[in-house]
Length: 117
Image (cartoon, rainbow, N blue to C red; front, side, top):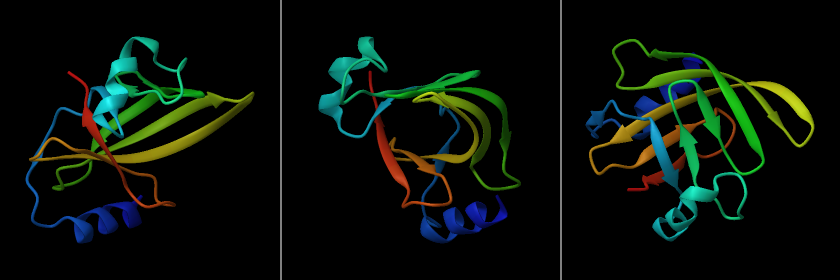
């Protein structure tokens, strides 16, 4: 997870951050129209709550959500199920001043999501 913190800090050093990562998010605003069909429609938004993440073909219990040091970021430890598999996952979440939720998993490029209102 230290690598994720370093990566996040180096990629976006000039952005200010908000703390509210919980909510319904989509890769594109047009996908927000399916917010009432989370996990049932492709494409679908995602939802983070204080206890759960819901995506298209997976659902995760949030075991912990901790602020990452002095960084404006949160480390989530998840236990997930999807496509008949159970697995553990970690994610680093940040929200930029322009309202984009950035999700880092340490493997792929960061994903950016807009909040569905």
